Length: 149
Image 1 (cartoon, rainbow, N blue to C red):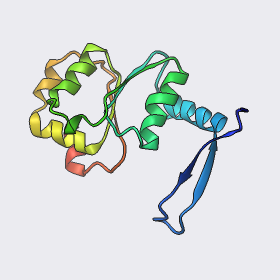
Image 2 (image 1 turned 30 degrees about the vertical axis):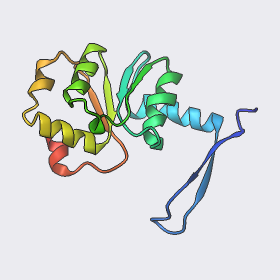
Image 3 (image 1 turned 120 degrees about the horizontal axis):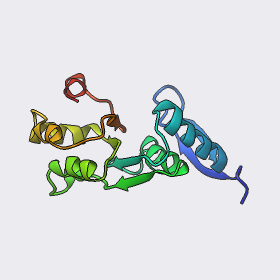
Image 4 (image 1 turned 180 degrees about the horizontal axis):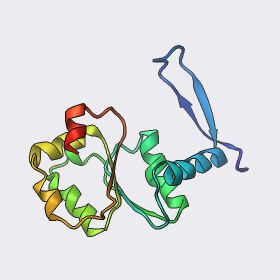
């Protein structure tokens, strides 16, 4: 298989007009993932990302898998935590224990965390990387949630 062989075809919903099909080759997807990971988000080599997003979101797995791993980083993936019996506190403990630099999740997860810990006490009590980044995918963050973060 060549690097230009199609990796996948993305079908848009057509919300801005007619639905479209976009073909991604392996090399273009890996290159774009790498550039998004490094240039847009400022990640370095050996970064650790913790993702709790639905793995099917293209922006989620593009960052947590391809972009991160292409630079030699590590990804901790635990899908759909907010529907688990786990407490949202689990997220902060995993992030702290593994010196995670970026938490990549969905807005619904942040709502669950905020409801469990509205004052952010758990987050403030744990030793986090000073350059901790939050990345949300899949849906828009509502302004009140964004200001809470």
